[in-house]
Amino acid sequence: MSWKLPNIIFETLMIGPLEVNCYLIGSKKDNAAIVIDAGGNPEEILDLLKRHNLTLRYILNTHAHFDHVGGVGYLQDKTGAAFLLHQEDMPLLGYLNDQTSAFGMSPIPTPRVDKPLADNEEIPVGDETLQVIHTPGHSPGSVCFLINDALFSGDTLFAGSIGRTDFYGGSHTKIIHSIKTRLFTLGDHVVVYPGHGEPTTIGEERLHNPFF
Image (cartoon, rainbow, N blue to C red; front, side, top):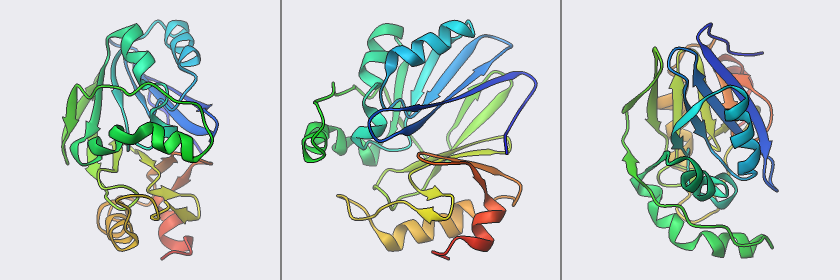
């Protein structure tokens, strides 16, 4: 199961202590790139950008939990790329290292948000467009990103599961509503790339996810 476009470079890195899926999407047309959920190992991300001769324009996050944010500050400093996050998750950045200490992890640098993400906002990637879908539930500002037939779902939807809702700002009612009304309305063929674990499809989750 994979998503490919002829003019798009697409790579997945599993990074950080909680094995977050970090996604790199680059344009062969203008060599511009975005990174989704740079949770750690920023040097690996930089090496991948260099290997493909890409310039990082945007660092996008599906949400602001520490395991998805750990490499963002370093990448900002090294590349000058803009960090985009939904405004309702910005308060979570204020206690990133309360999160790390709760998990017994080392502190991480707190990134600055250059621009808030808005629901239905469109971000260009070469000839393609990435759409922001606000899906509160795992956190207040959780979002998914849709580009062509690929959905980057963060910790909202997984293969056979959904995101935890027992963290600050989480809501089981909201995450179920978000998935039903914002994600399950997409085509069954859409490939879902989650924040952890293996890819799936909207059709597979609509039919077989035990939470529905």
